[in-house]
Image (cartoon, rainbow, N blue to C red; front, side, top):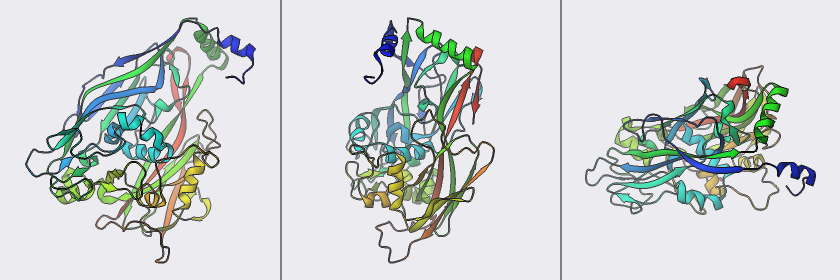
Length: 451
């Protein structure tokens, strides 16, 4: 602000009677979600108010449990807290769907957390509010489970819109629908053992989120300047554009990187990023798979050479396995222009977040072993920069673009410290795309989504 001319600062200083407060918003249907009961909750945002969309937070008491039989494994709250328990988060406005509801939400959430969030926030804010680390059965223990009050305050999708302060009086009523995942996302700890030991008697794990309510920050500008500017803008342009990110997920299973490739088809105005991760295919198993499946998918993984968090649930453990080199193609155009190796992928992730020349930023990856064994991700940024107000990504609005990711197996002499291939089930590749959509707002609360 100091770089702006004083004449302009004088005009902005005339905004008087500005107040902000936090209000409580109750859901429309129930206050409890569970893996073996009601799995969906619906929220309506306040109307005729200016909301700080990034401040939207979901509060709840997370309780994990087992069937109560002596000797069964203890069910733990997963890393990521409430965000790790969600399978789908969708938005709509006046009957217009604002996104496609990508599934599974917790995988997209984990990818973004690994690559974009630094350790400082993870070890302070998130450690208090969002369970940024898996804690053993002795912490917050309730029988053969855990109980903890958590707050989810970083939703993906429409809440990442710009402007962040959104005047809801211009929009029809906005609704958010949240659906929880199965209990297979919860890690287990043996009754006779320590955290990280193989699960031995899974029992019937389950979780619930109780006493749910939401909060959001409301702003009021009493001088009338904001209303006058908004109406003038609508009169001159005919509409107001609100850009926000959307996500799409494609998946493919196979035995190894040499036998498995993944492709997706997408049409959008601005394709900003492409991600590919690989996880143990057994991570996709649920409670219908039997004890063997539970034991394989629920034993928490010990991260390699980490700083901070030592464990994470297998459902979001992404590894390079037997990958030797990889490459994207977008409508037959190779990206990058050469066959990159698994370590190169981290450099691309660093460049994608504009961290190449920064000396005080980082992410959740703290060693090469941790990258290759626990948080590997192939990524390509296609937009000009990270300014969300610019639709500078690849324009695919007039065509149905084909995205293909291919990998090749490494040779014996590569020597990368990658984990062994999983047994039955092989690996599951997941392609995640991030694109920018625009909510176009017109007169009389009319709105439409520009893909």
